[in-house]
Length: 234
Image (tube, rainbow, N blue to C red; front, side, top):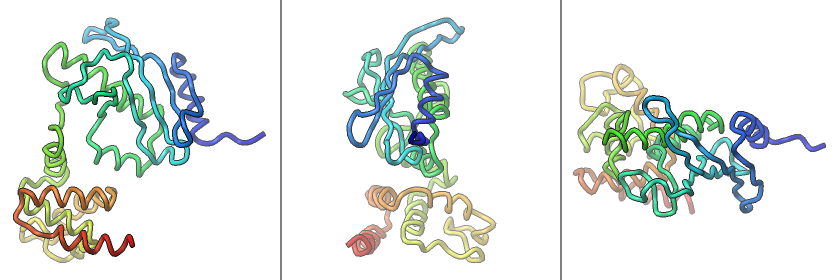
């Protein structure tokens, strides 16, 4: 008998814990999915609402891929403020954080508990109070800017752009050189760990962010890095 894959074993465990979900192996060549009911309680612990959702999983790349979540009951209004698109696909977190998580490996049960279920409870919290319990990132590229500011602890867009370029081009200063933030400290005593954390983002994402940052920053690294990146991918 053929041994089950990591994905199949994790789906079995998930369905044991959440028996309302059913597994469909062949959505298409790339994805399988689970469909089931997600019950949410209100702030007092009383049953509030049920959402029927689909969880799409990449059959070949699991657990090193980002699951896609679709709310199919249409209980959530399809507007940007609710972090859901017209087809019901949910924005569970900023893509940069999800991408970092996927590099480490995203396990289905953990993802459900830490990302999927909180998305729907947070929606209920906002519906009742007007704000999200743990705050939220701004929409579109403004949210990306917020991410880098929080991740690096730097709010100067020119410096952030310089750091993104250094990571994308593999030119991060050596440990005993001055930090890119402009302080008088060696980088190992300053922002090295935070800068190196950006290495877990893909080159494509870093280049895309660099281009968008330079629409407001005064640096001009993107022309060089795009040229260099294109040569590497030929």
